[in-house]
Image (cartoon, rainbow, N blue to C red; front, side, top):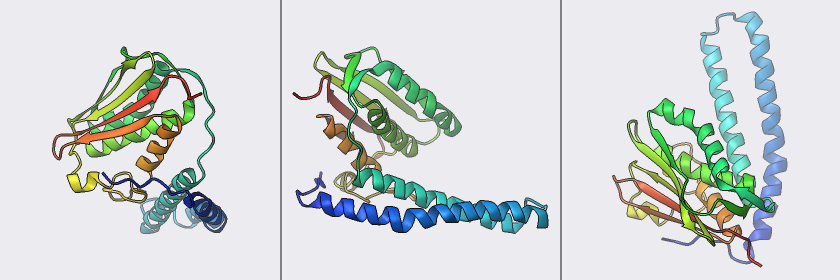
Length: 234
């Protein structure tokens, strides 16, 4: 698998590009979203039929603006990651909350989500929000790759000094050629993907002193394994 980690001189350039995007793209993007909302409200008085073609066009514009906004948000998260706010966290409520959040999407697609959180350490010193974001990225990837009738499992393991979080799916798997690039920035295998989810996830895990590994076989699903020290490095 290729390694797309940053070189020592990359960070200032990436942060400068991110600052430019925040100023040149985000502000007019927000203005466009506001004005589309105003246009929809004013149009309602002129065209009462909500099924009229013009409303479909506006909905498409709004959807594309939302996609662009999501991309900008993901890029800024990658380019200017927040500092870790470490605290002792009970991992089981964190993962249960995440499962409750994503369960409706799994049910909507007809994918079963199962939890097995009894093994491994209970309390770890992590950034609660960022770790939840990292695991959610992996579960969303699994959901996108798993057809109706498939399964996703979220489980824990490890020992006193190491926590394992495992996300396993019965989806389409990843080809060997694609697996070599899944952590490359902007590489994506799905329409509408930003190609930033896995690089951001790996960065979050590595900033905690951990590792993220993927094992997969085309047509036989994928397993993502997070390994985290239970306490931060001294």
